[in-house]
Each structure stands twice: as C-alpha cells, then as structure tokens.
Image 1: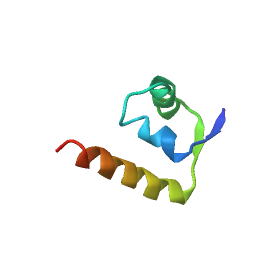
Image 2: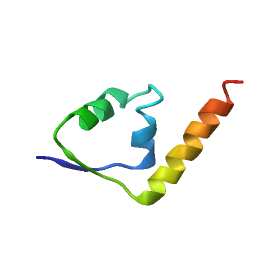
Image 3: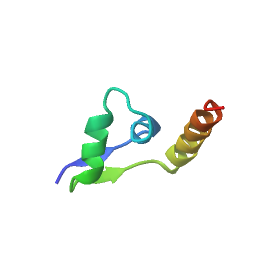
Image 4: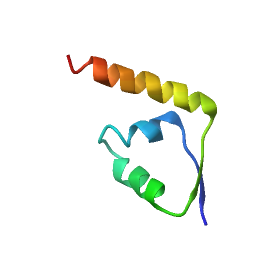
Length: 56
C-alpha cells in the first residue's frame, strides 16, 4: 500500500480540472493512505470560495 502526503493544491485538483487532476482522482479511488495537514482544509475552503465567487 502506498502512502501520499497531499497539499492543498492536490485537493483543489479534484474540483478544478487541470494538469494532474486525473492522477489525484486515482489516488482518492485507490487503496492508498492519504495524509494532509489540517491547515490544508482551510486553504482548500479559501480556493473553493474564490472559484465560486468568480462565477458571478
């Protein structure tokens, strides 16, 4: 079983398609252990808020 440390940009690739999005999606659907810092949650929320704000 592989282990991966994910930073906030890896999480945002799940919501915004760009280079590397397919690989990140595969990590989430695999049997790998994924690790992240609690700070990444706040950073991801900020990015998603900005993405949503730019829709209008």
